[in-house]
Amino acid sequence: MDAQQLSQVESLCETLYAGTPSTSEDGQPISRADAQSRLLSLQTSSDFIPQCQYILDHSSSMYARLVASNSLTELITSYWNSFTVSQRIDIRNYVLGYLANQGPSMQDFVTTSLIKLVCRITKLGWFDDPTHRELADDVTKFLQATVDHCILGLKILNQLVDELNLPTSGRTLTQHRKSSVSFRDVCLFKVFQLGLTTLKQLQTNAIVSNPAQQAVLGEQALSLTVRCLSFDFIGTNPDESTEDVGTIQAPTSWRTVLQEPATTELLFDFYAKTEPPRSSKAMEAVILLSSIRRSLFPTDKDRAAFLGRLIGGIRELLKNQTGLQHQGNYHQFCRLLGRLKANYQLSELVKTEGYLEWLDLAASFTVQSIRNWQYSTNSIHYLLALWGRLVAAVPYVRPDTGARGHVQQLEKQVLLVAKTYIESMIGSVETVMRSDGALDDPLDDDGSLKEQLDRLPVICRFDYGSVADFLLQKFDPLLNQYQELMGHMGTNST
Image (cartoon, rainbow, N blue to C red; front, side):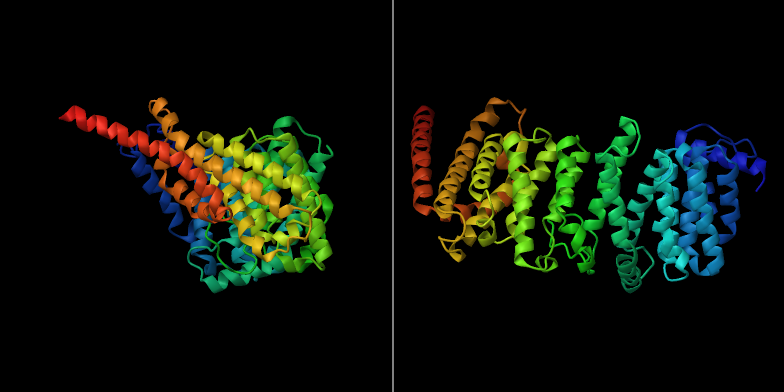
């Protein structure tokens, strides 16, 4: 490729991405579709790799660099077996060096594409040479350089975890699991620690940066923490479309860091002192941390201490309503409450210090959320799941276990939650009608309504008599009003 050909590529890129008019050699206008077709020819043969490198080295057009990077990723993936081991390492080192030298000054969409390229090479060449398995070590040089390089390094680690966690088109599931398991054993814990270390440095102001850089660093470090904790450790291929968190099957080698009090405190502190999306991501990390497998803890005492720290952190947030005015934080916090009983038995909860206070605070929060259903429709079912799981476990816990009077206190709060839900849903009819279309009817939201009604019977059966009496008190007057209204309508029609 020469300067003239480079200019043609840049012109085609401007036409494709910016809509800038351009013409072919014979003077005919080139449409966006034509421009895309011509540029895609760069992905048809591995012989075009030098041309892509030439574009990266000599073009000042960000669009041209993007096309070159995307083309390299496609060529490497499609023609991987056409390269020798040394050629693969050379390309990997070239891209990594390019990111180190040019990355901080490039547009995000270009660096994102180049990061994907280097992580794809790392995955495909994982067993070729030890060099590919040293990417995390190489990235630490980014983390120790300028703030912009640190941000770039965290982005590389985020993409690396995604690349090794998710199957790649054209590779068998066996190939994927082989490299994924090796990455888990060799590299993942180191990556997780790098994320936590960055958060600690931000917390102690050890990284000198401006507010905008701090926000990006925090978001990237928290995203990395979440990605590591939600890694598919045992090859279950979880459904990414659901928000439900299963048990986190973290390896035993992670035990020291995961059960360390400082880890839980760090995430709660980051949640309390930041704004969304960082605070929401911090709460998501707490949800994952609360879902760690039981067998990771060496003794019941260690697990109880871990649970105590979780309950204590939640109590403080409920007392102060920290960050719960933000929709993202609120939703993740509801998920945390719903998840808590799924991973811990009621017999463990009632023995936790401050359990009764936590129960009262959780009930008040649930009641407030249900009464303000306009803002919490998609989150209420997590709260109902908490109460449903609590009452379902009561028969398996001795009344004299843990906090005194915990069963009576639970009965009181469950009845309050059930009554509030019934009142709010009945009252929502008039509220929606008065809004003149400004509010969505929660009774018309089939998805959320089904989630809620699936959990409500378990809650109501806990104190069936009281809930039934309350329902009749509400239903009978409404039925009489309805019958009178229908009678008047029938009289008027005759």
